[in-house]
Length: 355
Image (cartoon, rainbow, N blue to C red):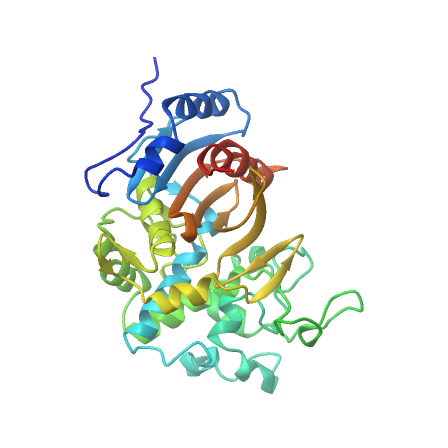
């Protein structure tokens, strides 16, 4: 018989038990959620963890995964690139989000498809998926589509050589909305941000991440994807355990702090969680993270989350002190993100948050 690892409350490591957390989440909630997952209600789930204000309320593993599994959460780990940009700015390695990206790669000049607007593309443009480069992973015809990038060796060169995009009559231009940006999902830009951090730190991206982010969080096991030039990939696919993903979420839930230590500046976390661009279909976008309103028990809340192919998701609700980790392996399948959203909203938050 499968041994379940779900936990109602955890006192050690994450602090004292809160009466609110204990009252709101019950053993019956844990058992019901596990039964729904095992029933296949949310397709192929490999792990779920629910944390609130220092307590792990639920933790369980499915379909061959366990607490030691390094999950490939695909683009969910793009958010790590944003966290490292924030760390590098805090450390004085990068002057700010308004620094032009091309300034870090002078050896790539002259660029293909030259245009003076390329030299005006900033770090923030890539953080918000709103640069003027013709790069759209949701469009198979886009010259910047990630599948084309994977076919070449130098991914940064691929990115910066892209042409400036045009705006079809049915696409909103940056100056036509309150945020002054137009969203275009671009994996190439996220990877390039990682190499900006690597250049700024003077070493490899993985070395800086281990020293500045993972070691302070007690994360000792990671699985980086690498390019043909042996560069660590910031665009996704970073293998992390469920609890490691939880720790990243705690930084967003607790203003950049973990167990009393300030790992990232609170102002960076606050800026990351702001809406910087409208992402379509009711979604908004911060700094390499998604935002979407939800109604839970007749309450209007904003869910903030890291999201990746397969239905992988790390959700953080700072006002509630909540972090939810969902790992799934339904890669490329229809409804994968909707299944994850139902699991988070209906399976977990409806049980966790009072009406």
